[in-house]
Image (cartoon, rainbow, N blue to C red; front, side, top):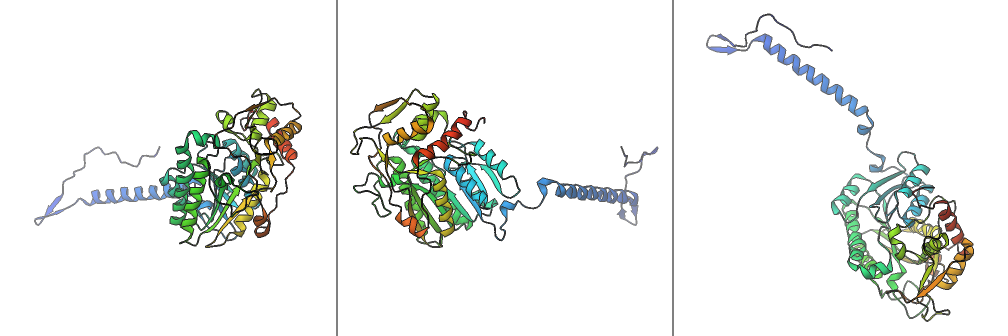
Length: 412
């Protein structure tokens, strides 16, 4: 170890010299102070150089910079079922993506799959955050150069919304307001909003068009409609490009088997019918519960429009490309064909090859008899048409993922 001090056999005087009534510092002491200052400055400079060369002090993150030809999309809820599939498509199409998710409904495993598929710097980042925390949201927008937002993040179970409505108004309506405020504050001018056919309630006439009155009958649909209203009101005095996609019942998974649907075990009771069918086929639950057999439909069970997640994601990407400043586009995303729950169950039995026990129970609160879309507008204006319309085939694809991921994203 180097010794920068000097040893002396005689103690050096520290007194000032007096000359003609004036005090003068000892010149040797002055030189010593200057030397120490120079040494400290040199060491500080060396530390700064070393820190700048380290990864943590390198050039600003690519996610915080705007680059020609690169579109940076914030995907809220990107660790969830639909959000992760949307992120996969965006990355395949060479978008830069930031996922923000609090993992209350999403899966970190899905994010890891995406990170492994697209490991290149500047392609994908994940930020763990809650959209209910306005300070965190504002910080995320201040540190990242977003060009657009795809807002998927939301709780989305009709039955749960009737039991805990305040959760839905906070999570859907309030959080959407927070996102819009952050977009406005940081000059992000493009929004693709994930809405739902639940905003229509139970219309008198089928199929549902974009002009069908919105009269939601459950807190989930009401919260989504409120969020839509906030977006539309704000857009009147801004140049934001907005697309609102009202989609129907989502099924299926990535055709190449990279992503799937893996709801938390405690939410199985509230989940989609496809998840319940697969759970029954795997023996996780003793059978399938069909709620309601006395609806005014051809077989007494609810009729729904089942849209494959791959088609749904395609609609979002086309909406992103077609969004125009100062305009709000509203589109139904569905196949245009309704299928009953009984028909769905039969398709699931064929897709899984399992004879599933079915229990028919009373209606679930907040459900409606029949809902299916008229996709004419989105066909015409966005050049979008559902391609994966074979119900049994979509279920087969999803079933393959389920069988190879018995613990969801926990293990493959």
